[in-house]
Length: 175
Image (tube, rainbow, N blue to C red; front, side, top):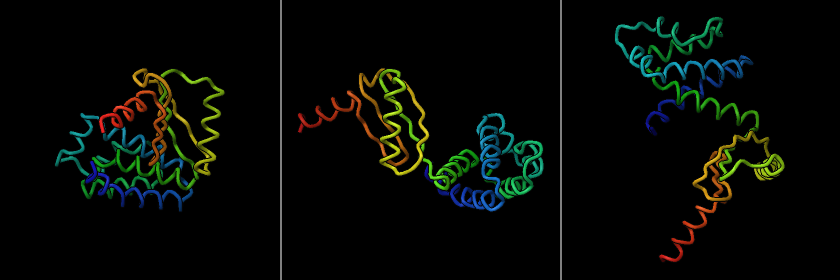
């Protein structure tokens, strides 16, 4: 996985530079997400890896009709260099660069029970204050947490779950 990310990073940066300079970052984001979903499909992955598939045919499979010409050229470069399997990683890194440019932090809040809207708004406000950026929140429910919540915001993970507290207590008692 880390090797794929290492290989994908320069392509993601190049894609983001092209999209930003052309003023089409949102369109590129959607186009890359589509191409990544296609490239991640097992049948499409096998087809894209076939040695007889031409770069033009691969680009035709991955680019939506009416795609930005710069985007189709980008896909052509990926196809020429046999890097199309990296599209899911490239799309993920592109999204991170896009969020950084827009000064947005994406956070996932996993709680033991569905959070009331007022509590979710309070957590969002606290995260916005902590990061000094806008926060896009995605929620999930995991009953195995027993109580509390786990917040995953990029490089920061805040484990306020009862399961996490019990695990920390167990570690402390064991030492």
